[in-house]
Length: 310
Image (cartoon, rainbow, N blue to C red; front, side, top):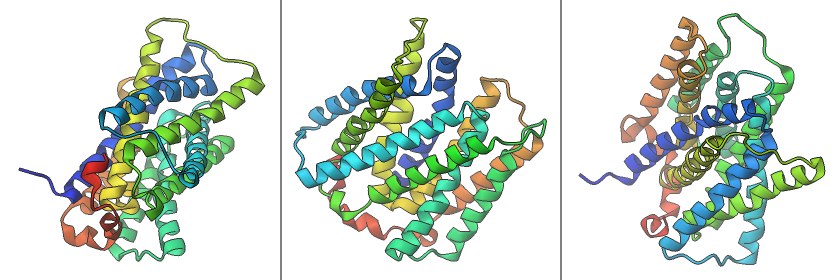
């Protein structure tokens, strides 16, 4: 049975969120191996760029781009890179699961940008789902020991969240509707890697993995939270719009908490379990039925030929 565009959008949004939530799974072992955030992200982007370029050529698309679009994608690339950098830096100030859950403030920022900048109406059910999701996230942000959160780490995650929200909204604008998705991501990564290259150049330090198998973590970062997540996020936005895609991002902190517990031995408290239930419940309501999400998918009509632009 063929899936509708709406169903594809929800599925892709869930995949994007789940894979992005795997950032700590591969980043923290690299930190433990002695690498810093700039080096990890530099290799992450550099390894993802040829993957996206190869996919672009396989799909029969050229690398050509109008000069105006090139400049805009350069700005988006820097925005995305700054979002990645701030999130990875925050891992040095707080638990990765906490940082990943705090990152989910971005759906609220997306909704506000869409409402106040572009006049998108937010149905009451959407407002309620966002509120329930935020309550769930707040319940996740306390460890079993009740440790306080680092102010520096909080600001880093908030700025990372704001940058990611800007990307989600911007990539949905009509000016990008004639650019194949793969080409968008290729140039976002290409310009984004310059941020880390410049920082490494000025800092004078590029650290490498000390063990050969740690290169597998870098490759996994390039493929899952980068290439797969960015690609699925962009397609999901084009199918169902930025607000539902952002709300589906509630799965990111759930995956991050699961990784923290299953891999890094963090303790999962009843409070955190309750927070997960609230988040998943809100996401389920958003996914359920066209009547709930119909008011939020008007931007999908901007991409009538999306199947040919993957």
